Length: 141
Image (cartoon, rainbow, N blue to C red; front, top):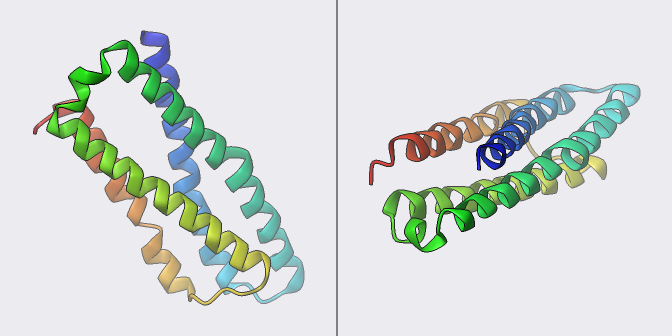
């Protein structure tokens, strides 16, 4: 049980590291004008998204579902804090997928946002992280 919880947390940290860093790379990519720099950002973004973020997300969800199953899924499913947490996780997964769309836009040189937009976009996972952690620790609802 503690091993599963540890693995869930380890991969959650991995996932969030990518969620924090990829939009920061987008900031620098949007500011870049030289071809060598642009190509370097494309490689870094692709490796981060597919090599770290996505496996981190999948493993976070896998170990989270496993933990919930072991602890009695029905016990969690009726608790409001858990329902809100699941909703936030669904929205976070949507943010992750949207990052993939932005990655594809950069790959095909179709970026439509300024570096300032990406700076604000980069703050969204912070809100998710705070809300999800507070819900999981305090179970307020």
